[in-house]
Image 1: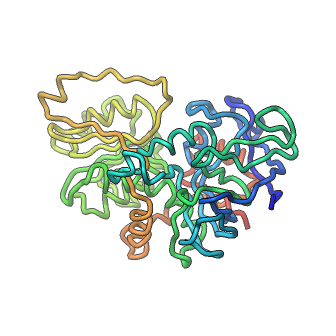
Image 2: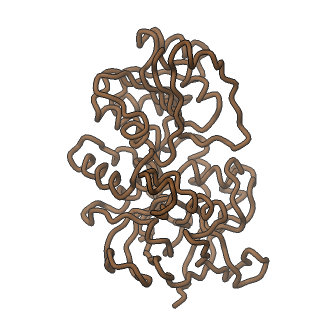
Image 3: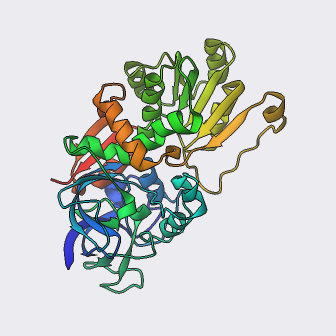
Amino acid sequence: MTRTMRAAVLREIGLPAPYAQSRPLSIEQVALQSPGRGEIMVKIRAAGLCHSDLSAINGDRPWPMPIVVGHEAAAEVIELGDGVDDLAIGDHVSLIFRASCGSCPSCAVGRPALCEPAGVSNASGSLLGGYKRLRAVAGTGIDGKPGSALNHHMGCAAFAEYATVSRRSAVKIDPELPWDEAALFGCAVITGAGAVVNTARAEAGSKVAVVGLGGVGFSSLLAARAIGARAIVAVDMLESKLAKARELGATHCFNAADPDAIARVKEATGGGVDYAFEMAGNVNALELAYRITARGGTTVTAGLPNPNATWALQAVSLIAEERTIKGSYVGSCVPSRDIPRFIAMYRNGSLPVDRLLSERIGLDDINPALDRLARGESIRQVIVMD
């Protein structure tokens, strides 16, 4: 059965801000096909607006056009494809932007974030397995004709009333969790908290810095507090974000625009931090994070800069100072394990991610919301579909 629904379609990359005027996302009637084998159809209940969505719109992370955007969401299962026997109609799920095939070399060694088939399908705008279940109705699809296929953003296409996704793009979650809060666990929390807990494996008593305070960066900050870091340094360009960081447990706050920011962080932390997390998605932030990392420390980057961005590194410092640099995709998480774990931490009060919700909006309000995201005025905006 094909279902007609409203969805946010991106047809052209790089339209200028303000987005309230250029309107890069058009709310269109789109046809959604029923799930195939190993797939499910869900009703999207809430979807988070993330900087990764903005990077698709401004061209920092180019995707095949036209595409239904959105990759962080909580949803209700409404239809099961053949072979799906571990979910039921009515189950609540968190959508995840990196599916895992379960059988490639990376999946076989317990690193699903590096799943190669999932990377190929995401890059091609497909679901895992290469399928496209979206069809244009009001506009044209991939081949320029009405009724032809549209691309799926990161296997989710979550800025829509419904979605068909791979079963491996969904994790069953606690049905008591409010939809708007549940949405954050699909990207912001697993990426930010996962970088602290899984990628860095930061220890209690360590000194931690977070550079870039969006939804992901704040999730890292909350995780640093949860694991018992003795110093939590927050670095951002906006004083409003730094004020929020103080509320959420930062022990030191510094404005990245201060030309003496690096020296001030080192002075405050006795030579630098044990773990620095770059969550801003630009090379200047990565440079700052590396330079405030102490000798023997680890710099973790999860900010996803433009693919053309490069960074000149003083290579000898890696050796002489025994430094480590790590990339962190999806927080190095195993979503079926880590999403329930982080939800449990939220439930017991140690990871208060509800305090990151800055605004609840409707699907029709998405373009003005992109402007607020681009200006750094919001931590996490959530589109509520009901």
